[in-house]
Length: 231
Image (cartoon, rainbow, N blue to C red; front, side, top):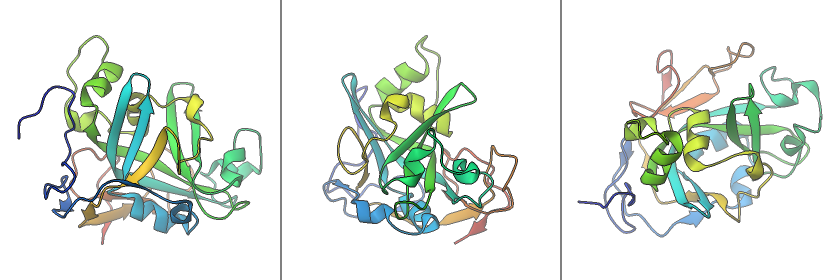
C-alpha cells in the first residue's frame, strides 16, 4: 500500500494488517481507554498497555504510536519510584486519580511520560518507554531531526525521551487526563502475541524488580532484550 509522506504508517480501520509482533485482526474504530483500565494493579496495566496507541493532538498536527515497551513503578517501597521519598509537589500526580499523565523532566534533558495507575492515594505509574510510529511520521521526523538528519522509522520513538520529543510531549502535558483531551491512549484492536519481562533500565536502584515488559523482537524496543522472561 503506497502512502503519501506524513500519512499513517499503521493499518486502516477494518484492515487486517497488524504491527510487528502482533496478530492480524479486525481493527475497530479507536476507543480511548477508560479510567477503569488504569485503576488496577500496575503490572497488569503495564502488560495490557502493550499494543495500545498513545495519541497526542497539537496545533501542529496529530502524532501517534503503538506502545511496544513499558515499565512499572509501584509505591513508596519501590526505591526507583518517585514516590519513594513520600509525597512532594513534583510527584503529586502519582498520588492522584488513575488515568492521569505524569510528565517530568529527566536529568534536565528529556521529558518522560507516564500513566498513573491504581487507586487514588496509592502512588504508582507506568513509564511509556517505546512506540512503533503509526500516525504523523513526517511531523515526528521534523521534531526529532529538524536539520533533516535521517532517522529510521523504528528509531523515531525508541526510548522514553525520544518518543516524548517525537510526539511533542513536554511539561505542558503533565497532569492531563488520559481519558479525554489532547493526550490519550487508544485501543485500536491490536492483539499482542508474545511479550517478555525483564529488569528495568536506566536506574541504579530497584533493578532486581523485573517490571519492564516489551513486545518480543520488536525493532522499536529501547532497553536490553536480554534476561527477559517470555510469556
